[in-house]
Image 1 (spheres, rainbow, N blue to C red):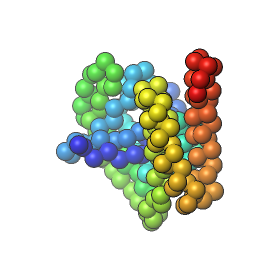
Image 2 (tube, one colour):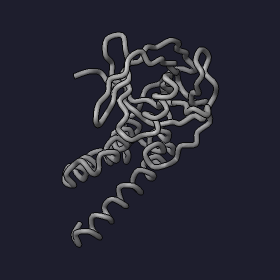
Image 3 (tube, helix red, strand yellow):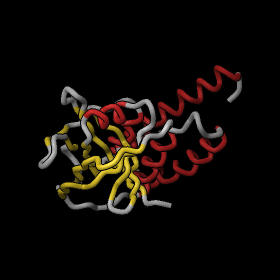
Length: 194
């Protein structure tokens, strides 16, 4: 299995507007693969402006916000490419697309790091932060997974939240649970059962 780094990817559209999305970058030798699903704004942007920025943040609210429609986070201009990074990030990579691989579901952009910067000391994730990341990924797959799998994963992740969450993690968890609860309600409304 390849190593995947969960990060916040910022791309630019033709008008120069930044768009952020939480994505797992896939390590592939000297490249990092960005593989957005079709259709997506990240895909559209990379096709018109083949550069991206990966912001590595310790604020898991950005990940939770990305999958729940909260995408307005302070950004700053990058150093070497035309792009934007999260203003509050531990570090960032400036990426240039070197190869495009077409696919019907998830095209792949093989990117090289052209510049990287550290902005503050990385203290690592606690269990609650890791649980928020896992739940953020899980919420993007609600339509793909059996409901029992979602519920069992959620039950396990709740343990870390109850034991180690701070205010940021609790807020991010709440946003994600709103999405999970809407999914639960939609299932109930459709089937008449939970």
